[in-house]
Length: 400
Ligand code: F3S
Image 1 (cartoon, rainbow, N blue to C red):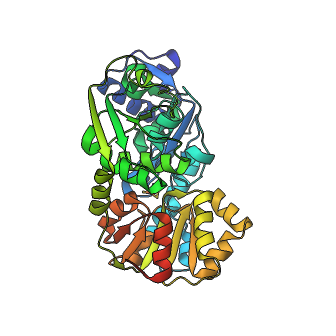
Image 2 (cartoon, rainbow, N blue to C red):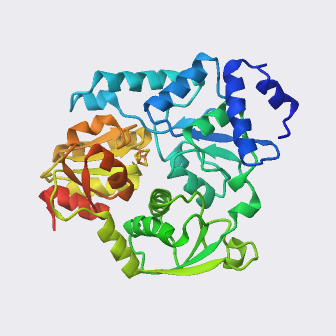
Protein backbone atom coordinates (compact mmCIF):
# COMPACT_ATOMS: atom_id res chain seq x y z
CA UNK A 1 0.00 0.00 0.00
CA UNK A 2 1.13 3.50 -0.71
CA UNK A 3 1.18 5.58 2.47
CA UNK A 4 1.69 9.34 2.76
CA UNK A 5 4.58 10.60 4.85
CA UNK A 6 2.15 11.38 7.69
CA UNK A 7 0.60 7.89 7.57
CA UNK A 8 4.02 6.22 7.43
CA UNK A 9 5.19 8.27 10.42
CA UNK A 10 2.13 7.15 12.39
CA UNK A 11 2.86 3.55 11.44
CA UNK A 12 6.47 4.02 12.56
CA UNK A 13 5.36 5.20 15.99
CA UNK A 14 5.73 9.00 15.75
CA UNK A 15 2.38 9.56 17.51
CA UNK A 16 2.88 6.87 20.14
CA UNK A 17 2.05 3.17 20.39
CA UNK A 18 -1.75 3.67 20.41
CA UNK A 19 -1.85 5.48 17.08
CA UNK A 20 0.74 3.03 15.76
CA UNK A 21 -1.45 0.03 16.63
CA UNK A 22 -4.47 1.71 15.06
CA UNK A 23 -2.54 2.39 11.84
CA UNK A 24 -1.26 -1.21 11.79
CA UNK A 25 -4.88 -2.40 11.85
CA UNK A 26 -5.87 -0.01 9.05
CA UNK A 27 -2.90 -1.08 6.89
CA UNK A 28 -3.65 -4.78 7.49
CA UNK A 29 -7.27 -4.27 6.37
CA UNK A 30 -6.08 -2.32 3.33
CA UNK A 31 -3.62 -5.04 2.35
CA UNK A 32 -6.28 -7.75 2.83
CA UNK A 33 -8.53 -5.91 0.35
CA UNK A 34 -5.75 -4.81 -2.05
CA UNK A 35 -6.45 -1.15 -1.33
CA UNK A 36 -3.93 1.05 -3.19
CA UNK A 37 -3.85 3.81 -0.55
CA UNK A 38 -5.70 5.46 2.37
CA UNK A 39 -8.29 8.23 2.14
CA UNK A 40 -9.24 10.70 4.88
CA UNK A 41 -12.50 10.04 6.73
CA UNK A 42 -14.66 13.00 7.77
CA UNK A 43 -17.02 11.24 10.19
CA UNK A 44 -16.91 8.08 12.27
CA UNK A 45 -19.38 6.06 14.35
CA UNK A 46 -18.32 3.16 16.58
CA UNK A 47 -20.70 0.35 17.51
CA UNK A 48 -19.51 0.27 21.09
CA UNK A 49 -20.97 -2.98 22.43
CA UNK A 50 -20.07 -2.88 26.09
CA UNK A 51 -18.87 -6.47 25.79
CA UNK A 52 -15.53 -7.97 26.84
CA UNK A 53 -13.72 -7.86 23.48
CA UNK A 54 -14.88 -4.30 22.85
CA UNK A 55 -13.67 -3.24 26.28
CA UNK A 56 -10.34 -5.06 25.88
CA UNK A 57 -9.57 -3.29 22.60
CA UNK A 58 -10.71 0.17 23.74
CA UNK A 59 -8.73 -0.04 26.97
CA UNK A 60 -5.66 -1.33 25.15
CA UNK A 61 -5.72 1.63 22.75
CA UNK A 62 -6.47 4.14 25.49
CA UNK A 63 -3.65 2.81 27.69
CA UNK A 64 -1.31 3.15 24.72
CA UNK A 65 -2.21 6.83 24.45
CA UNK A 66 -4.41 6.73 21.34
CA UNK A 67 -6.70 9.73 20.79
CA UNK A 68 -9.26 10.03 18.00
CA UNK A 69 -8.43 12.51 15.26
CA UNK A 70 -12.04 12.25 13.98
CA UNK A 71 -14.12 11.91 17.11
CA UNK A 72 -16.70 9.12 16.76
CA UNK A 73 -20.23 8.99 18.07
CA UNK A 74 -21.01 5.66 19.80
CA UNK A 75 -23.71 3.01 19.99
CA UNK A 76 -25.91 2.52 23.06
CA UNK A 77 -24.84 0.63 26.14
CA UNK A 78 -27.34 0.68 29.00
CA UNK A 79 -28.47 3.50 31.19
CA UNK A 80 -27.47 2.06 34.55
CA UNK A 81 -28.96 4.93 36.53
CA UNK A 82 -32.42 4.29 35.06
CA UNK A 83 -32.15 0.51 35.28
CA UNK A 84 -30.95 0.55 38.90
CA UNK A 85 -34.40 1.89 39.77
CA UNK A 86 -36.24 -1.10 38.28
CA UNK A 87 -33.96 -4.13 38.57
CA UNK A 88 -30.93 -5.49 40.39
CA UNK A 89 -27.84 -5.04 38.24
CA UNK A 90 -24.97 -7.50 38.31
CA UNK A 91 -21.92 -5.63 39.71
CA UNK A 92 -19.76 -7.19 36.97
CA UNK A 93 -22.05 -5.75 34.26
CA UNK A 94 -22.01 -2.39 35.97
CA UNK A 95 -18.23 -2.40 36.08
CA UNK A 96 -18.05 -3.21 32.35
CA UNK A 97 -20.36 -0.29 31.55
CA UNK A 98 -18.32 2.15 33.59
CA UNK A 99 -14.93 0.95 32.31
CA UNK A 100 -16.19 1.04 28.72
CA UNK A 101 -17.41 4.61 29.23
CA UNK A 102 -14.07 5.67 30.71
CA UNK A 103 -12.04 4.03 27.94
CA UNK A 104 -14.02 5.63 25.12
CA UNK A 105 -14.01 8.98 26.88
CA UNK A 106 -10.23 8.79 27.13
CA UNK A 107 -10.04 7.96 23.42
CA UNK A 108 -11.98 11.14 22.66
CA UNK A 109 -15.32 9.65 21.62
CA UNK A 110 -18.52 11.71 21.77
CA UNK A 111 -20.69 9.69 24.16
CA UNK A 112 -24.00 9.84 22.28
CA UNK A 113 -24.97 6.20 23.09
CA UNK A 114 -27.38 6.15 20.17
CA UNK A 115 -27.79 3.68 17.30
CA UNK A 116 -29.46 6.17 14.93
CA UNK A 117 -26.70 8.81 14.83
CA UNK A 118 -27.52 9.36 11.16
CA UNK A 119 -30.79 11.07 12.15
CA UNK A 120 -29.58 13.63 14.64
CA UNK A 121 -26.04 13.49 15.97
CA UNK A 122 -23.71 12.50 13.15
CA UNK A 123 -25.35 13.23 9.81
CA UNK A 124 -23.17 12.89 6.70
CA UNK A 125 -23.75 14.48 3.31
CA UNK A 126 -23.66 13.10 -0.21
CA UNK A 127 -20.27 11.76 -1.29
CA UNK A 128 -18.62 12.20 2.11
CA UNK A 129 -16.12 9.44 2.99
CA UNK A 130 -16.85 8.16 6.48
CA UNK A 131 -16.25 5.06 8.64
CA UNK A 132 -19.46 3.84 10.28
CA UNK A 133 -20.08 0.61 12.12
CA UNK A 134 -23.56 -0.43 13.39
CA UNK A 135 -25.65 -2.62 11.14
CA UNK A 136 -28.64 -0.28 10.86
CA UNK A 137 -26.49 2.80 10.34
CA UNK A 138 -24.30 1.61 7.48
CA UNK A 139 -27.09 1.04 4.94
CA UNK A 140 -28.79 4.30 5.90
CA UNK A 141 -25.75 6.54 5.39
CA UNK A 142 -24.64 4.76 2.21
CA UNK A 143 -28.05 4.50 0.62
CA UNK A 144 -30.22 7.38 1.86
CA UNK A 145 -27.50 10.06 1.99
CA UNK A 146 -25.06 8.70 -0.59
CA UNK A 147 -22.18 9.00 1.89
CA UNK A 148 -19.45 6.37 1.51
CA UNK A 149 -18.52 3.82 4.13
CA UNK A 150 -17.65 0.18 4.25
CA UNK A 151 -19.50 -2.10 6.62
CA UNK A 152 -17.01 -1.36 9.38
CA UNK A 153 -16.61 -3.35 12.55
CA UNK A 154 -16.48 -1.52 15.88
CA UNK A 155 -12.71 -2.05 15.84
CA UNK A 156 -12.04 -0.85 12.28
CA UNK A 157 -14.29 2.19 12.77
CA UNK A 158 -12.39 3.02 15.96
CA UNK A 159 -8.98 2.66 14.30
CA UNK A 160 -10.24 4.84 11.43
CA UNK A 161 -11.30 7.44 14.01
CA UNK A 162 -7.85 7.36 15.62
CA UNK A 163 -5.86 7.51 12.39
CA UNK A 164 -8.30 9.72 10.50
CA UNK A 165 -8.02 7.52 7.41
CA UNK A 166 -9.51 4.37 5.90
CA UNK A 167 -8.23 2.08 3.16
CA UNK A 168 -9.68 2.88 -0.25
CA UNK A 169 -11.68 -0.21 -1.17
CA UNK A 170 -15.21 -1.65 -1.25
CA UNK A 171 -18.11 0.80 -1.09
CA UNK A 172 -15.80 3.80 -1.24
CA UNK A 173 -15.38 3.05 -4.97
CA UNK A 174 -17.99 4.02 -7.58
CA UNK A 175 -18.06 0.60 -9.26
CA UNK A 176 -18.89 -1.31 -6.07
CA UNK A 177 -21.91 0.91 -5.40
CA UNK A 178 -23.53 -0.14 -8.64
CA UNK A 179 -26.82 -1.99 -8.30
CA UNK A 180 -26.76 -5.68 -9.15
CA UNK A 181 -30.28 -7.06 -8.68
CA UNK A 182 -33.44 -5.22 -9.73
CA UNK A 183 -36.10 -5.92 -7.11
CA UNK A 184 -39.65 -5.19 -8.23
CA UNK A 185 -41.85 -4.63 -5.18
CA UNK A 186 -45.38 -5.71 -6.00
CA UNK A 187 -47.02 -4.93 -2.64
CA UNK A 188 -48.86 -1.84 -1.29
CA UNK A 189 -46.16 -1.07 1.34
CA UNK A 190 -48.69 0.93 3.34
CA UNK A 191 -46.92 0.96 6.72
CA UNK A 192 -43.41 1.45 8.10
CA UNK A 193 -43.63 -2.14 9.37
CA UNK A 194 -43.92 -3.42 5.78
CA UNK A 195 -40.37 -2.16 5.30
CA UNK A 196 -39.20 -4.34 8.19
CA UNK A 197 -40.60 -7.36 6.36
CA UNK A 198 -39.19 -6.27 3.01
CA UNK A 199 -35.75 -5.74 4.54
CA UNK A 200 -35.69 -9.13 6.21
CA UNK A 201 -37.00 -10.96 3.14
CA UNK A 202 -34.93 -9.33 0.38
CA UNK A 203 -31.53 -10.97 1.11
CA UNK A 204 -33.19 -14.36 0.63
CA UNK A 205 -33.58 -13.32 -3.00
CA UNK A 206 -30.51 -11.16 -3.53
CA UNK A 207 -27.82 -12.74 -1.32
CA UNK A 208 -24.72 -10.56 -1.09
CA UNK A 209 -25.57 -8.50 -4.18
CA UNK A 210 -26.61 -4.82 -4.14
CA UNK A 211 -30.42 -4.57 -4.46
CA UNK A 212 -32.19 -1.82 -6.40
CA UNK A 213 -35.84 -1.49 -5.36
CA UNK A 214 -38.42 -0.40 -7.88
CA UNK A 215 -42.01 0.30 -6.86
CA UNK A 216 -41.44 2.04 -3.49
CA UNK A 217 -42.93 5.52 -3.20
CA UNK A 218 -42.31 8.17 -0.51
CA UNK A 219 -41.01 5.91 2.29
CA UNK A 220 -40.80 7.74 5.63
CA UNK A 221 -37.45 8.04 7.36
CA UNK A 222 -38.67 5.43 9.85
CA UNK A 223 -39.47 3.10 6.94
CA UNK A 224 -35.95 3.62 5.58
CA UNK A 225 -34.48 3.04 9.02
CA UNK A 226 -36.44 -0.23 9.23
CA UNK A 227 -35.46 -1.31 5.75
CA UNK A 228 -31.74 -0.86 6.35
CA UNK A 229 -31.77 -2.44 9.81
CA UNK A 230 -33.45 -5.59 8.53
CA UNK A 231 -31.45 -5.86 5.29
CA UNK A 232 -28.42 -6.06 7.51
CA UNK A 233 -30.02 -8.45 10.02
CA UNK A 234 -31.73 -10.86 7.62
CA UNK A 235 -28.64 -10.57 5.42
CA UNK A 236 -25.47 -8.57 4.95
CA UNK A 237 -26.45 -5.53 2.89
CA UNK A 238 -24.44 -2.35 3.43
CA UNK A 239 -25.97 -0.44 0.51
CA UNK A 240 -29.17 -0.48 -1.52
CA UNK A 241 -30.89 1.88 -3.91
CA UNK A 242 -34.54 2.89 -4.40
CA UNK A 243 -35.40 4.17 -7.84
CA UNK A 244 -36.62 7.76 -7.64
CA UNK A 245 -35.89 8.01 -3.91
CA UNK A 246 -32.20 7.51 -3.02
CA UNK A 247 -29.62 9.87 -4.52
CA UNK A 248 -27.62 7.39 -6.60
CA UNK A 249 -30.79 6.04 -8.24
CA UNK A 250 -32.72 8.85 -9.95
CA UNK A 251 -33.48 6.26 -12.66
CA UNK A 252 -33.08 2.51 -13.06
CA UNK A 253 -30.23 3.15 -15.52
CA UNK A 254 -28.38 5.36 -13.05
CA UNK A 255 -28.74 2.80 -10.26
CA UNK A 256 -27.04 0.20 -12.46
CA UNK A 257 -24.49 2.74 -13.78
CA UNK A 258 -25.68 2.19 -17.33
CA UNK A 259 -25.36 -1.60 -17.27
CA UNK A 260 -28.12 -4.19 -17.31
CA UNK A 261 -29.16 -5.75 -13.98
CA UNK A 262 -27.49 -9.10 -13.34
CA UNK A 263 -30.88 -10.45 -12.21
CA UNK A 264 -34.46 -9.33 -11.66
CA UNK A 265 -36.72 -10.61 -8.89
CA UNK A 266 -40.24 -9.72 -7.77
CA UNK A 267 -41.33 -9.55 -4.12
CA UNK A 268 -45.07 -9.76 -3.53
CA UNK A 269 -47.44 -9.24 -0.61
CA UNK A 270 -47.56 -13.05 -0.27
CA UNK A 271 -43.76 -13.06 0.32
CA UNK A 272 -44.11 -10.38 3.01
CA UNK A 273 -46.97 -12.28 4.66
CA UNK A 274 -44.81 -15.41 4.71
CA UNK A 275 -41.95 -13.42 6.27
CA UNK A 276 -44.27 -12.10 8.96
CA UNK A 277 -45.26 -15.65 9.90
CA UNK A 278 -41.63 -16.75 9.97
CA UNK A 279 -40.48 -13.89 12.22
CA UNK A 280 -43.12 -13.93 14.89
CA UNK A 281 -43.70 -16.21 17.81
CA UNK A 282 -47.30 -17.40 18.14
CA UNK A 283 -49.92 -14.82 19.12
CA UNK A 284 -51.52 -15.00 22.58
CA UNK A 285 -50.75 -13.49 26.00
CA UNK A 286 -47.63 -11.30 26.29
CA UNK A 287 -45.64 -10.30 29.38
CA UNK A 288 -44.21 -6.98 28.16
CA UNK A 289 -43.67 -4.73 25.13
CA UNK A 290 -40.23 -3.55 23.98
CA UNK A 291 -39.67 -0.99 21.21
CA UNK A 292 -36.71 0.87 19.78
CA UNK A 293 -34.29 -1.40 17.97
CA UNK A 294 -33.15 0.84 16.28
CA UNK A 295 -34.00 3.69 18.66
CA UNK A 296 -37.48 5.15 18.23
CA UNK A 297 -37.81 8.59 16.70
CA UNK A 298 -39.93 11.33 18.28
CA UNK A 299 -42.64 10.59 15.70
CA UNK A 300 -42.81 6.98 16.89
CA UNK A 301 -42.76 8.02 20.56
CA UNK A 302 -45.66 10.34 19.77
CA UNK A 303 -47.58 7.38 18.28
CA UNK A 304 -47.10 5.39 21.50
CA UNK A 305 -47.99 8.32 23.77
CA UNK A 306 -51.16 9.05 21.80
CA UNK A 307 -52.29 5.44 22.13
CA UNK A 308 -51.68 5.05 25.88
CA UNK A 309 -52.61 8.54 27.13
CA UNK A 310 -55.18 8.32 29.91
CA UNK A 311 -55.21 4.51 29.83
CA UNK A 312 -53.59 1.76 31.87
CA UNK A 313 -51.24 -0.80 30.28
CA UNK A 314 -51.91 -4.44 31.15
CA UNK A 315 -48.17 -5.24 30.88
CA UNK A 316 -45.05 -3.07 31.13
CA UNK A 317 -44.06 -1.19 27.98
CA UNK A 318 -40.42 -0.19 27.42
CA UNK A 319 -39.09 2.23 24.81
CA UNK A 320 -35.43 2.68 23.91
CA UNK A 321 -34.39 5.96 22.33
CA UNK A 322 -31.65 8.57 22.10
CA UNK A 323 -31.04 11.04 24.90
CA UNK A 324 -32.23 13.83 22.58
CA UNK A 325 -35.54 12.09 21.87
CA UNK A 326 -35.89 11.24 25.57
CA UNK A 327 -35.44 14.90 26.40
CA UNK A 328 -37.98 15.92 23.72
CA UNK A 329 -40.46 13.35 25.06
CA UNK A 330 -40.00 14.80 28.53
CA UNK A 331 -40.48 18.40 27.37
CA UNK A 332 -43.53 17.49 25.31
CA UNK A 333 -45.28 15.58 28.11
CA UNK A 334 -45.03 12.18 26.42
CA UNK A 335 -42.77 10.72 29.10
CA UNK A 336 -45.34 11.63 31.75
CA UNK A 337 -48.17 10.13 29.66
CA UNK A 338 -46.28 6.89 29.09
CA UNK A 339 -45.20 6.60 32.73
CA UNK A 340 -48.74 7.29 33.94
CA UNK A 341 -49.93 4.36 31.81
CA UNK A 342 -47.27 2.04 33.29
CA UNK A 343 -44.55 2.36 30.65
CA UNK A 344 -41.00 3.73 30.64
CA UNK A 345 -38.60 5.35 28.19
CA UNK A 346 -34.88 4.52 28.41
CA UNK A 347 -32.19 6.73 26.93
CA UNK A 348 -28.81 5.36 25.76
CA UNK A 349 -29.83 1.69 25.90
CA UNK A 350 -29.61 -1.27 23.49
CA UNK A 351 -31.76 -4.38 23.83
CA UNK A 352 -28.69 -6.59 23.43
CA UNK A 353 -27.43 -5.72 26.90
CA UNK A 354 -27.47 -7.58 30.24
CA UNK A 355 -29.78 -4.99 31.84
CA UNK A 356 -32.71 -6.90 30.31
CA UNK A 357 -31.96 -10.11 32.26
CA UNK A 358 -35.18 -9.64 34.21
CA UNK A 359 -37.11 -10.40 31.00
CA UNK A 360 -35.41 -13.78 30.39
CA UNK A 361 -37.89 -16.60 29.84
CA UNK A 362 -40.70 -14.13 29.12
CA UNK A 363 -42.61 -13.37 25.96
CA UNK A 364 -42.85 -9.84 24.61
CA UNK A 365 -44.27 -7.94 21.71
CA UNK A 366 -42.11 -5.70 19.52
CA UNK A 367 -42.19 -3.78 16.26
CA UNK A 368 -38.62 -4.88 15.45
CA UNK A 369 -37.53 -8.17 13.85
CA UNK A 370 -33.96 -7.19 14.73
CA UNK A 371 -34.92 -7.03 18.40
CA UNK A 372 -36.52 -10.48 18.18
CA UNK A 373 -33.44 -11.89 16.45
CA UNK A 374 -30.82 -10.59 18.88
CA UNK A 375 -32.70 -11.43 22.06
CA UNK A 376 -32.98 -15.15 21.31
CA UNK A 377 -29.58 -15.62 23.00
CA UNK A 378 -31.03 -13.90 26.04
CA UNK A 379 -33.90 -16.39 26.18
CA UNK A 380 -36.61 -13.90 25.24
CA UNK A 381 -39.33 -14.55 22.67
CA UNK A 382 -41.38 -12.04 20.72
CA UNK A 383 -44.52 -11.50 18.76
CA UNK A 384 -43.41 -9.16 15.97
CA UNK A 385 -46.01 -6.77 14.57
CA UNK A 386 -46.81 -3.14 13.69
CA UNK A 387 -46.02 -0.57 16.40
CA UNK A 388 -49.67 0.47 16.80
CA UNK A 389 -50.83 -3.11 17.09
CA UNK A 390 -48.04 -3.93 19.55
CA UNK A 391 -49.07 -1.01 21.79
CA UNK A 392 -52.64 -2.28 21.67
CA UNK A 393 -51.35 -5.71 22.74
CA UNK A 394 -49.59 -4.11 25.72
CA UNK A 395 -52.84 -2.36 26.69
CA UNK A 396 -54.75 -5.65 26.57
CA UNK A 397 -51.99 -8.07 27.71
CA UNK A 398 -52.43 -10.24 24.67
CA UNK A 399 -52.48 -10.18 20.90
CA UNK A 400 -55.05 -12.01 18.87
FE1 F3S B 1 -29.73 -0.34 18.37
FE2 F3S B 1 -28.95 -2.35 19.84
FE3 F3S B 1 -30.90 -2.68 18.15
S1 F3S B 1 -27.66 -0.91 18.85
S2 F3S B 1 -30.38 -1.34 16.49
S3 F3S B 1 -30.93 -1.34 19.96
S4 F3S B 1 -29.27 -4.15 18.53
